Amino acid sequence: MKYAATLLLSCLSALAQAPLTTGSGIDWASGLASTPFDFNSVANLYIELFALSTSDWSGNTNGGTTLGTWLDRTSNHNDFTNAASSTHFVPGYRFGSGPTNGWFVEFATNTTTASGSPFGLQCVNSPGSNQPNTVFMVAKLKNNPSCYFDAISGSREQFVGRVIGGSPNNSTLYAGTLDNTVNSIQSSDLWCVFSFTFNGTSSYVRTNGVVVSGGLNPGTGGLGKMMLGHDQTFVAPYASKMAAVLVYGQAMSTNDLQAVEKNLSKVFGHIYADGL
Image (cartoon, rainbow, N blue to C red; front, side, top):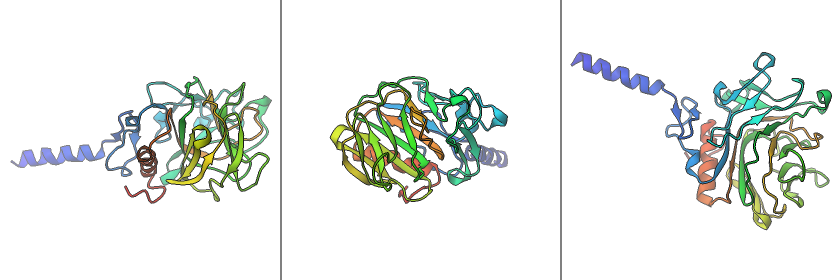
């Protein structure tokens, strides 16, 4: 009897220490989530990037501070790679200043590149996501002019960044038509959960579960071959931090939007009052 009790306690201890994972294999940070949420349970998940452990990237150089590839957790393998020819001012991964003082990806902080190299991370594939589609980010979005994501080259598809040619308090959505009427996405340098829904004249932006701009009209362009942290002309570096990027090929229901937003918040230590 004593042996059985000891064995039971040992098994319970092992289970408590074992990392929880989502259905797509993401290591769940210890103590941050009592019930893992499978982000792939919401339809049409094209890209799933998380900064939760060192297994989320590969090919790092420069003492481990320069990021080679940010690995997509879906079976689509839409990885994001640093295509720069130099390790100067390229994205790196860091530990200690992310949500819950954990991991995050840090982008360039200088507008001068080495040998014309870009700062951003480029998707190795074109996900082929036409509108409608929704992009989620756990990030710090700076108030200075900068690009959060863009298409790599050619006809600019979808672009989100601080305003170009409009009110300094606004941001920009672009998918063929420049819409500078996006209300301020963020007023301070804080970790937030953002969602950007591209759906023609019904496009909108949410921050921490709240619509901050609706009825936008950025055009009808698709996602394109996505680049994080820079625009395709390399004049608007992001100069900040990201901890997660998810892309869904649909305009999501309110229930699905809230489920993804709240669970992203929960994964990273309850970024906002998500009620979970």
